Each structure stands twice: as structure tokens, then as C-alpha cells.
Image 1 (cartoon, rainbow, N blue to C red):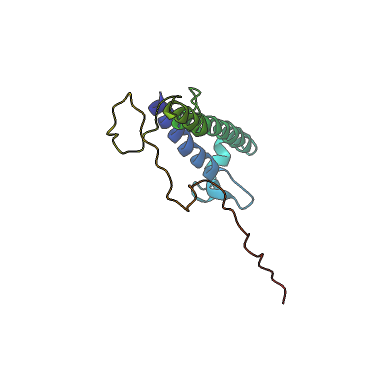
Image 2 (spheres, rainbow, N blue to C red):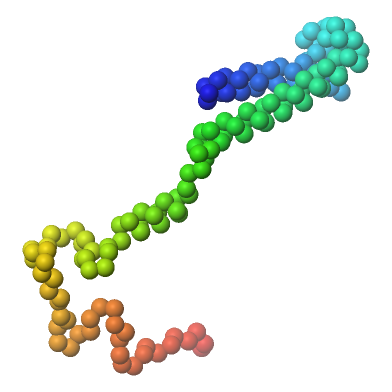
Length: 145
């Protein structure tokens, strides 16, 4: 289906290019210069303008529709896939540790699975990470002189 639409889109593009180039504009266009004005005599004086104008509008609409359908098909959003944020949220929810289990740190645990791992205690006189520091705050740096 995608290949068929792509070939149809290319044919519409080439046809649209040809129809636009054959139209006669204010300066005579390609219809008067390349074909010696024969397009005017084949379709009539006013008939050529109406025919090419209608062909341009129809091919332009077909170009718009095939471009839209091909863009939707190539992005893969026709099936209603989830966004990247929803996929990451689902992945992090499934990867989150369940209560009562230890998160994986990349280091193999030497303790058996039934025994909890020992908790490291901070050295005397130091604060464990994640606790606020006590004492006097640092002076605010003022910009005034």
C-alpha cells in the first residue's frame, strides 16, 4: 500500500510540474514559447486557461492528500502508538523495585537472599549523605561596593 501511494505521489508530482509549466502566464509562459502557441489553438483561447487551471487545482489537492497520508504512514502513528513519555513512564514503573526488595546497584550481593544486607554507618564526626549540614550558614555575597 505504501509503495503504491509513493508511486502515485511521484506521478502526481510530475504531472503537477508539467501542468504548471505549460500554463501561460502574463508573459506567455512555456506554452507560448516552447510549443509556438499551439496549446492556445488546441484548447481554444479561453479553454486552455480553464483546463489547466482546473488540472492544477485537482493535482494540487491530490498532492496534498497523498503527502498527508504518506507522512502519517511513515511516522507510524496510524495505529495509535503511545508517546515517548508514556513509554518511559511505563518502563520506569515496571523497573521500579517492589517493597521489600533491594534495588539493583550493579554489584552482586554476597549475602544470601533471605538475609538483609548490612547498612553502612558513617564515621564518627561526619554526617551521612542526604542530611542537612548544621552550623553557621555561609555569608551572602553582596554585589554592592
